[in-house]
Image (cartoon, rainbow, N blue to C red; front, side):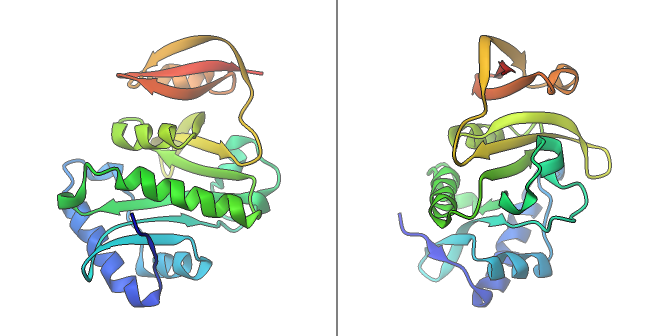
Length: 209
């Protein structure tokens, strides 16, 4: 699979793909769209790739380097003090006719490889809506862990997920299976447990070391 770095010449195609994906959603709360200015900044930072079929952009995934002073910085939720070593796993769009081919995860692996090789970051952070099972499974496949479940972005319930570049999050003890809809348990216990994987409809948690 060939990935292409996207640049300012691709900006209109990125927006068009985002709009097509968003318009086709049954539950639009699962996707927080970005503005043209936000995509332009992501392009300038250099962590955005795409897959093309001929001349048509059919999939894109990106990462974003947040400013340290950004409101609701995910590093605060994850207990990370050095915000300069943090990058966010950002948005993914795949054309409806191209789904089911593993594009989302393969693009994620490629971006994580680039982040590792840069040596500039220690932590990749992201948020996921608890009911967005495809996104949860994607993040677990890539090695992310749930480190906090809380209200974000004006009262929306979100998992904060973290992938450490140098080492894994330390856990111990027996696994605790929690149904993905039991967000009350997750919010009550996220200071003491980390969600490490998903089996059927259950997230597998372990005690933090």
